Length: 326
Image (cartoon, rainbow, N blue to C red; front, side, top):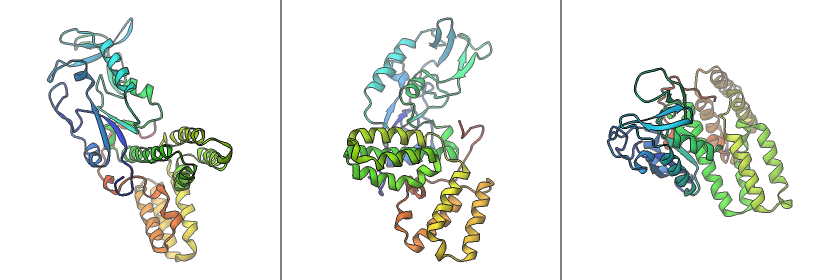
């Protein structure tokens, strides 16, 4: 555990920051992967190399025919469908505990979405559709509630922040599950209350009831059920109104000690955040300063205010053409 944070277990496409193994022999640069590398445990994979293709190699494409989707090599006409599916199943079967995936965007093997689906071989003719690559589809099907992103979407600040939040929260819970301790679960839930409130008040209530009912459940059963609810709660990013609600709850813990001008300053920051004029980090920074000033241990322990290491905070954001809400 570094800086108080566990190291997430991440599976990444090998061509992203690790090796020059893309079809054209290039390595893909990713700021998100670069800053994550010293803070996480990475397992890398290049499905196309693993099924015997060289570097460089003729590119492959997803093609729809009467029998369904096929993975074909355009230049040679080789059908790689069965080899890729067999590799994906074997690789995913052999994985241990995984907290998240970072896959090559638009790749016919690794892409998680927006992969071109062609009506046949050759470069002529309109696209049939867009979807997931063969390995990417296997990942999403096998790990539906696990964070899966591509390096392109991680250029978006909001998507990147949500991905990091899920990664490190699930990694932290993995340690709780390993302990098998109900006391550790109670402490984890207490630290996650504001985070869960921001993501899903319904799941917060359900998980709170589960933790409160702990004497009647075996620890393994309670931990497994809690994990399912936690993953559901974190699947979508929090909406601005929910984050404002959390920060107003936090303000209630320190409101007696602040001046009218300080309260007005925070409320103005919240209005600007809700209007999309400043990021969430702006009002959060104000509340964090109050937590330090008044030495509020309960608030200081809330993961909402620091869900992942500070080293991962960046201000760059492309966001072009990428949806946060999906």
